[in-house]
Length: 169
Image (cartoon, rainbow, N blue to C red; front, side, top):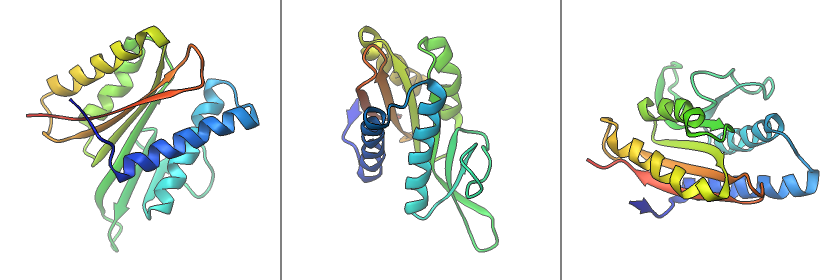
């Protein structure tokens, strides 16, 4: 079952929507540039929320990529990891088999929220949402794990679709 977006999810969605405006204004094109710009926005949101951020190739302020495309994390005063508010995977392969590999990393991750950014042809978007939700519900992981799935309509490259899914018992 789909759920309403919470405050953090709405902030992430806002960053992604602002990214689409940047695409239009700045003319960003290509998977590498899109990935870099999306990572930058989500990493900066993590910093604004007071988290440490692990993300590759964004500069000296970031720790290198560690396990996932992006991780927001919190350490205590002794630099011990105490929680992970967000893990993110971004995959531009249009096939489910290409998306599945990165998505399954989120299934096994221990984070408060999990974000998957991917793309599909307009006629396949709903089918991809269904496949990812089925994967969440069938995985024998923790109840109440929260996923924000973001799918770009690659037929037009001008709209993202969003769905929040919570793992049930």
